[in-house]
Length: 119
Image (tube, rainbow, N blue to C red; front, side, top):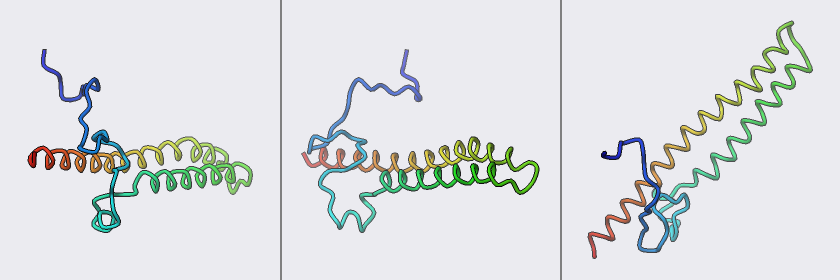
């Protein structure tokens, strides 16, 4: 039976000339020129930092709503912000991270194809 589109096999791994696995999040040998031309991105570090800032703010905001009520439903909104707010924030950050991951993988595939065509 042919392998379906959604079931990727991880028993083989393509590597580039330098020996780094295709799809690694930190390309080796990237220069400042690659960074300035958006060929290498700092997305994983920046996204992690932004995620933790947002999660901390949402949690503190929710706790503030619980401890300093402004209406009779403030505690419910506070718990909702802590639970649902952090869940939605995590999903949004993961969507952005997936887009950056796709870019990283496509860049590695492009490098691999260039080196294979030159050989």
